[in-house]
Length: 108
Image 1 (cartoon, rainbow, N blue to C red):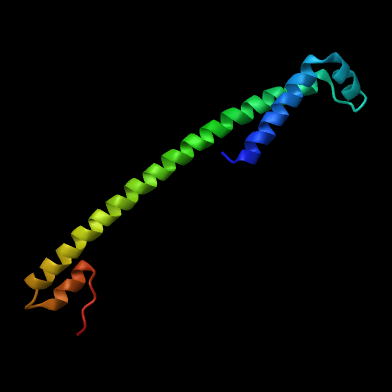
Image 2 (spheres, helix red, strand yellow; image 1 turned 30 degrees about the vertical axis):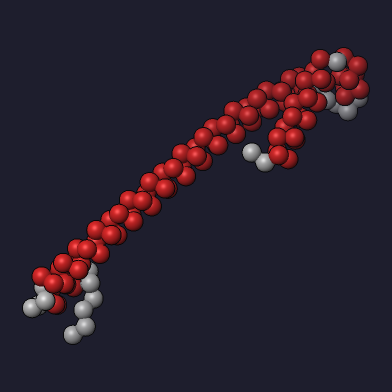
């Protein structure tokens, strides 16, 4: 996680938890039309944000793992297909136009 995000999240959590617990701060915020319910709702939203961020990071890691596995599988099949085309080229030496049935372009 980026450090600036972590610092911001910690500052927001501290602000809302301190403001929720301190009636003097609540009185000052009330003049700005920020109620105790607003502070409680913000604390709930922060908890939801943390949960959503954790899910996002987990899924991002899973996606990166899946991409590595997919890339490895494509590399393996690419190697296999290279060998297959080499063998097919030898096997179809007498009739190279049949290689086009395998998707290989052959000059006429």
